[in-house]
Image (tube, rainbow, N blue to C red):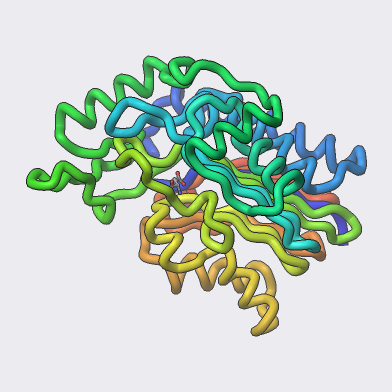
Length: 322
Ligand code: ASP
């Protein structure tokens, strides 16, 4: 038993040749966010506070596809989404379709704590944000030069261009993306457990570059991209449509609960056997302080630490990093 924390900044087809100017800021952010989370756990903060705190840091960093760095829809707008969940109580909150809220994850927590509901989206979620007085900015502030350029390239090629990954093809007749052709990257997430076995998870994203307006991915869908119970806390990343079909996060918990698998066994079974190759990665911790970060994509921006002194920050599989 002991505390443990893991976080991710997205899984996808990350080339080993990723230039240092794109790799280093993300590695530095992972290191910083890990330190923030570890310090909070050592200060006895509840895991729910810890995952919210860490995801807020990641949302505030423009190098990830969440909060400030959120990618753009086909209409050059931002539609952010997020979900947070407490393991022992299974209380959870989720939001989608946010265009002005600085920290989507904190609004998700307010949905959990201040409403009788679990999931608010689009105009209703924005109105709730105003009512709660959370920090908002004009939507134009989320539209960064980097994301305008990404969208421009995608539109010129008539396809959905996903950060460093291969492009998603567009259906030329219907002008909508064929999502099956690709994966995406940059979503952020954090899972944490304290010395008493309290578990929590949080995930936040801008979704896909050039996604259809109104598209909802796996991130805010409880049991798909985000899930925690009294056994484990899971945050997934990758191709949202594949993750929803495979109920990735819930399946990890279910394999532990119903089949007695360890966290590592359950997570690697779901990632290796239950989701198509190249579509998914996750970070997870168990009530007893185990941590695991499997992925079936080329890489996943990730970091973890445990009370017994283990710590890891990586992008590609350990064999490729050496
Ligand atoms: N899973 C997210 C989505 O499909 C994207 C990601 O993980 O990068 O919206």
